[in-house]
Amino acid sequence: MIDLLKKQQNRNKKLIALIDGEHYPQVNLDAINLLKKYFTGSFEGIIFLGGTEKISGGDPGKFYGCRVFQIGELDRDFPAALDEFRPDFVYDLSDEPVVDYFKRMKIASFCFSRSSSYMGPDFYFEYEHKRIKLSRPSLMIIGTGKRIGKTAVSSYIAGLLSEKSKVCIIAMGRGGPRVPRLIRTGSADITPEFLLKMSRKGLHASSDYIEDALFTNADTVGCRRCGGGFGGRFFFSNIGRGVKIAEKTDPQIIVIEGSGASVPPVDADRCICVVGANQDWQSIAGYLGIYRMLISDIIFLTMCEEPVASDENILFLEKKIRQIKKDARIVKSVFRPRPLYSVKGKNIFLVITAGSLAGDIIKRHLETEYGCKVTGMSLNLSDRKKLYMDLKSSVNYDMLLTELKAASVDMVTEFAFSEGKEINYLNNIPVITHGSSHIKNLLNRIRVGNEG
Image (cartoon, rainbow, N blue to C red; front, top):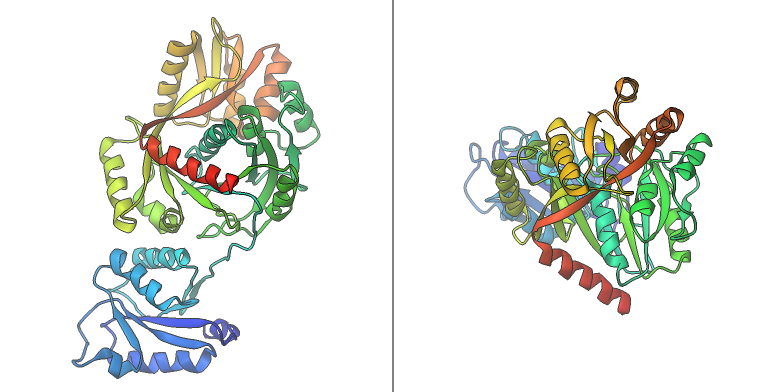
């Protein structure tokens, strides 16, 4: 990493070092002097992370010849230290037992939230600046993982905004179009035949922008991306071209929907982070989910109900979120299915990506609210081999009802047409159980920006 540090040859850049008390002070000092030698920018100071075994007495600032910010509680004090130094680069000279891998991922999250890159002897987390600017008021919706309902939340929020404003959604996926594709509201009926035509041309007809167009009254632009780093960076994406296409539709508000745990390099006005209440905190924090939450105006918890997520885990997640973001605006929600077309009196074979616990909830809700009978179910929409076996063995149904994801068009819709069965698509609607005022206030702020 020394060679990498040498490449940061910009005298306007600022560097700080992280040290601990398990190293002898002279060892720390020698290491810091090496950093100063190799880095041509400004060395701003030190953050002392703790450990007292080898600390000597006296004033550490005088000993090291620079400002020293001493950490008490990492979650509380480290962001404050970054705010004081405002570094471009943070170099970690600490080690076990003061800082383990989990704390390092927290530190990386805090650094990214302050637009700082984080590096150490054999690692480098490079912060990606939000280089894509927008000419319209905007909202970005990101998540801490896949299969947590981010697209459903995006469609829901865009639908609320569309009630009073003209909205364009930019969505991306790993199967998105090579050239960003615009679907205009009302320009074409997105029918099963329309989707099959796309699929038979070799296009991914279940991409998120198709789902958004199907379930919202908004223009949508489909983009693609490949790869995803710890902080949500892509290997490549065509979202820059997608933004230009979206702005040509003359929207009043632009909604940018991330893909998986990606964080698009877009300088959006507001941000919502979607978190699954069934997620494990260690995996959320270890994958820089903390960073995603820190940059967001609202933390949108989905699937907040038994048996998908226990009350204990929901309370635990809320506690951990507030430890790292005391003023967090937390919204809690559950999903309820809504078929696109009527299912009343139909025998349904249901095809979804949810687990068996959520599947039971969906089945009960469909039968109770929409007057159908779910005679069979496949939870393997994202596993083509198992899905094929489920479809071939399915009997006693009139209609296939599927989420618009994964293989829902090229396998499920194709199967329905080949077997002479009806095909229908399922939307997951977030039902807010706590924090609806946070959503209302955020949308009002975006609308005010539009009026301005």
